[in-house]
Image 1 (cartoon, one colour):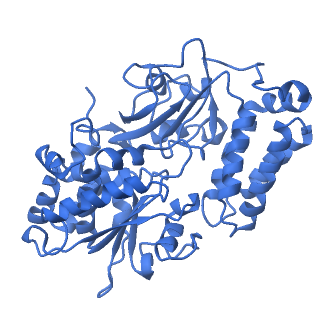
Image 2 (cartoon, one colour; image 1 turned 45 degrees about the vertical axis):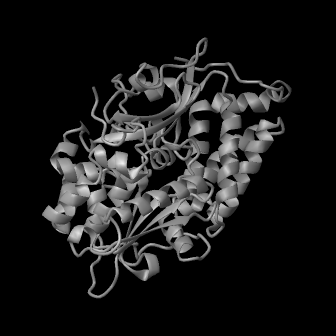
Image 3 (tube, one colour; image 1 turned 90 degrees about the vertical axis):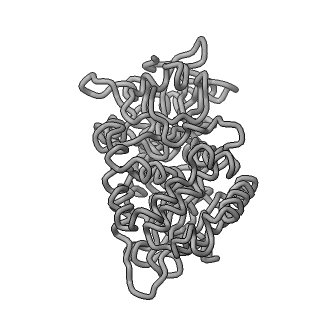
Length: 446
């Protein structure tokens, strides 16, 4: 049975309350951290664990912590990025809703390690009921002496604040989040300076994802080496995956990093296979911002080996034949899916959510939206397909934040792997625009 770090007790009745969470061993990491460890020792254990940021970038969390500047007389902040807005991703929402005290415990341990006396949880603004759940959990923890002044007699103080998000996808980018948290419009900042040097209120700040922070209690309790022993290579530990699309068992799964993509899709323990009578056509493995892969490439590497659910294996081959684990938003598509229509849907989203600060993104996302709409509605031409590729290239790498890349990669990869489907839309406009029409040409189905 695979080790469960985050969801071991998720189905225990009342686990969302302090009393039940405490009975199941909750807040033991806070006691150990504050009574038996120094902040430096906690940072070292997180570094040894090899845990990588679970928000999408996959940057080593302990290394990020070690970058935090520590000038005398200047406050430090920890900000939890709970502005989960990536289409196809809902695992942080699930974790906060079902077991909020795990995040609260992680925030306390992490804040102590970083020397932060005031920390924030920035939650997607649409999830007001989740904000209420977190605020209740914070009140319970404070009443039990785990938050506030002189926690457990340790002389360590911590105030934890839940902040509703600005209602924009761009606020999930860490510097735009900090701008929003300060009460400004959520526009990304130029870097450097990085948040570790000048972040919230121009003070040293660490921004981590919900799932990332929720791992810290287990690491403190069991040690960084124990965490690093799970997973494969530099993909250590477990990973929450938001699984949706044409699978038999959509939901949130905590998987050991290193299982095969094939097992994740078809095993009864996970997604349970593609819905009856249908076959796998394509997968978006890490949320809407990562490259789409056809069935044969998502299941197998170029050398014939099975592709694994790890950061390295999914990216093997680069964007020519690979993708990214990203935020873990795993969307499976069967042969009834229209890649052109889905790509246009994503393009509309990124066009709408661009902050407009960078002209390649502001203008380019609009062009991709309009050209894809034209193709989808039977008014495109063959030149439009190459135009989309060209626009995507001009956006990629030319913006302050990664939203430009996130908009460009899905379009470029869809054309790279499903160009015949785009051409079919151009060559057969009357057929392609019929309700429910889907290209059924040279697809490699599994």
